[in-house]
Length: 192
Image (cartoon, rainbow, N blue to C red; front, side, top):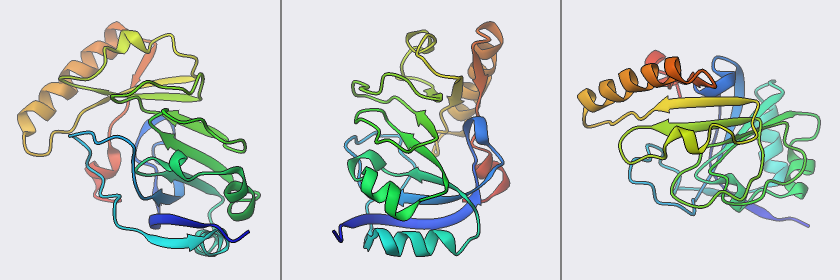
């Protein structure tokens, strides 16, 4: 079978968020999302169609065995066939909103709940955005995950609100130590 996948971009960088912040990874950003979050800072709509072999060739050129599948929402396209054909022998990380099931073969699943019911019943990491209009962290504090990350929302057009979100998230984490603070370090240091 020669399935084609809508890929927005493939690039090599450091993970900027969550438990693996600072770790080198190849990022495969899939196009499209089932949610339309008003705060989304990712342009994931443009795409090129690629086969699993084309994806594998581009990923392997970087010489890094850790791959982060992200989007948009990668589970809209991610299949066990793609995992086996494109990423055999690699450590796979997935960033998902949790609204679709996760195929087998993923080593680290990060669920970042948004505005829709989560069907994933457990993961390695919860990464919850913290700011006005977002879920109360208490709702997710007992979710089965190894790591619970609270990430202050970056409001691009309002630096004061961004600062308030950061200050409030720091205080929340100090008072609720099941959480750890996650910053978008890739934005701080100026990388993708």
